[in-house]
Amino acid sequence: MIKWRRSGYYTIIILVFLGNLKISWLRWGDLIIDTFRDQWVYLKLSQGAVLYKDIFYVYGPLPPYLGSALFRIFGVNLNCSIFLGILILSLTTFILYRLCRLFLGHPWAVLLIAHFLTIFAFSAYSYLGIFNFILPYASASTLWVMFAVTALYLLLKYFRTGRSYYLIGWSGMLCLCFFCRIELTGLLWLWFFFFGLFLKPRAIRTIFIFYHSSALLVAIVSYFIFFSATDSFQAFQEIVLKHMILTIAQHSSYSSFTAGFNDVPESLRLILIVFLLHIIVLYLLYRMSIWIACIRATSGNWSLNALIVLAILILGGFSGYFLREYVDYQFRMTPFMLLIVLFAFLRPFLAHIRTISNKVVILFTLFSFALLLVLRIFLKAGPQYYGFCFLIPTLVCYYVFCFQLIPSFLANWFPQTSISRFHYQLFLSYLIIVFAIPGVSRNYSIYNSRVAEHNFVGIGRLYTFSDLRTQRIVETFNYLYEHIPPQHTLVVFPEGIVFNFILRRDNPLHYHTFIPDYISVIDEQVIITSLQESRVDYIVLVQRDTLEYGASSFGVDYAQALMSWIMQNYQLEKIIGSFPYRSQEFGTALFKRNQEAKNSESGI
View: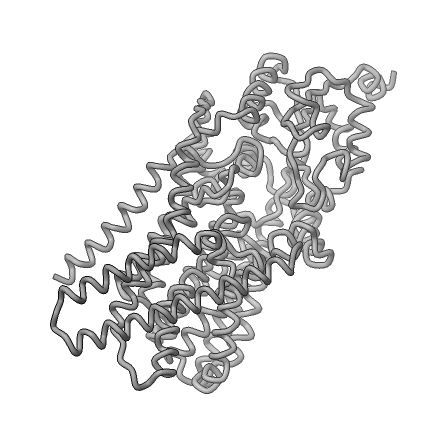
């Protein structure tokens, strides 16, 4: 019976996964922003380019070389990236379920996974379609999260069982994290280091620090071998390390935007309101569960119980309706929740640290790990923003907080009362489903709105919106295909590597994306020099608003010197739509290298 029940739970998860995959099939990503950046790097590496030395990339080497290996084996096709995304999501879902089962029963763990798949993994909250696991804005982030969550699970299993092979696996996952997102793993490594200092007895602390240090040592040695073989350390310093330093030291506009620090008062207001609403709703559910327990104890009338349950379900529906204004901000309060729980658990954690299998120690580890990951999105936590995948451990904490910690706290607060915990969890599950319905409905609506099919010969298919922006992107594709010979070179500003990837028109530069944060790493003069040396034949200017980086318009709010050089050395050949950045309407402009520039380069 138990085996059949478990099979039923797994079947539900698989059906939810496949259902979301079917609904969203080929309806991910964006034609301009983020989606094709990884694919271009995969392509260049599969052609023999060396990461960092020949191609600009700000993350670790594992994701691009993994993608390029798929390109080498199966050919250059978008389906390779889709397969990689599905693989990462499948493994993440499996390990997340195993992590949930450490704290939650089977039904609630299944609910969490369904919640994760529909609201996070296959999210379609925005027009762009880049906040999902299949074609995300950066595969390095989703792959890193998969390794990080696996590391957390293995560490907690070690705490529970004391078996050393879990600790070895944890060390291996931590090492793999270094090859995806170096800056995030460095922070994670430091957290584990300080965490290990508190472990007792000394024998456990020693073995923990040994495996912890081994992860860093293996990563350093591997990087040394990689840099020695590819002679790319200097480029790595100039790209990855400089990007990390600028992000940390200058508190970039993008970091402030993703963390919600660009509007702190409004962010704090939303966090406080949503947190208070959660506490009120959970308290009401608890009182209702006490009421149910009292009725069941004094009456055997099951029809009355059924009527009460029906009334509460209707009440939950009305609650969801009246609170719909805050449904999109459901997870804004989670960092605040993490801080409160950690503060409450700090003294018990220090008191029980000798017994690492203690529940308090394990919960403190989970919540502190989750807080570490949401620091980048601290005041703007949600599935519809950059950094959405870093919220996954927090989703587990959210369920533990609502399903376990709150009822336990209230039970201690009202010790004379008895509660029907099953009814409390049942009502809570119902409310979670009610609050998830708007997100699921939005996903379904947006995916169904992507009806414009683009069949890129030899590359794959995608469906996008059939709007003016898409029409002009397609017009640009067609014009470039007809008027730029295959042997000529093309660079797109500030972003639009999709034209190079789909049309196979080479971008000879080291760089492929020219958004404000990257230009601060590269430097405008370096880009100008590269354009001169490479003698780029054509330049396309695309209206790509970069407000999230603190500057909206290329050539107006940033990169003015670069735009001025382009205007001096290239002549306008074609405008599709409106000229970029002169109105709110989307448009592109094609420039061809003028004769004066050619003569200057030839020494005439």
